[in-house]
Image 1 (cartoon, rainbow, N blue to C red):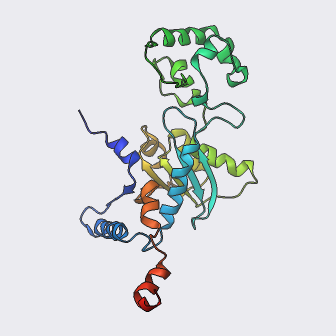
Image 2 (cartoon, one colour):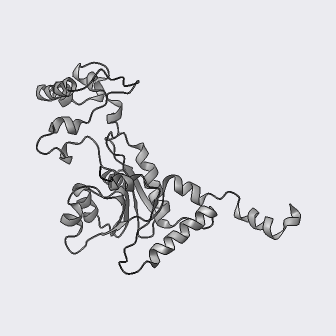
Image 3 (cartoon, rainbow, N blue to C red):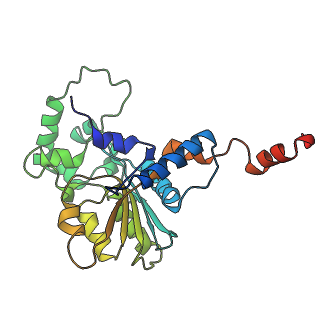
Length: 273
């Protein structure tokens, strides 16, 4: 069995990065920092990168995607947040995790949760039938909803299985870009994109066109977006693997056990206690 490096990177709380091939000092500084915070939480505040990625990391849990939850934050060059997004269906549509394959196949329950194509197309219903017939329905699902991915069934594991055109959801980066236009519009040229998964080809093109200069990511999304899009041309965004603490580690490391003022008072003025 091989190690799942991508999954390990995706669920990690502390990320250490050393881009210097012949210099271990950057890595040593990171280790000293987090060991110090483990021993003394709240000793220093989080970095701009950490506080921004923490927001993207939290935002991903809003997603109703069955496969992967992704969060994204767009900032200007000074780390001022301009938009937040996560991968999900357009506003007003039902998230995939709340829909049921049997309901659409039998054409019952909430009609508005399914598109006209899903409800009426005979070829799609044939694919639904194949999915149902190949399932092990004797298994006790313990109350779980039998959700399904439209893209997977539409592509039917054939050519173009990973075709992003047929996904119901907006990607997190795409959603964040659109929020800027939806709620007033503001320039982000020269800004930064923080995303828990690096952009796919479609989102990479949008980031490039909008003038994003730095893209911070946690795990590398499969595909050719980096070599084919982001590293091509005269205005290439700089891809940077995120280093820092997020998730539970962010809370544990940066939340002091005792306020620093009280801690100093206890040490410097013990007679007052």
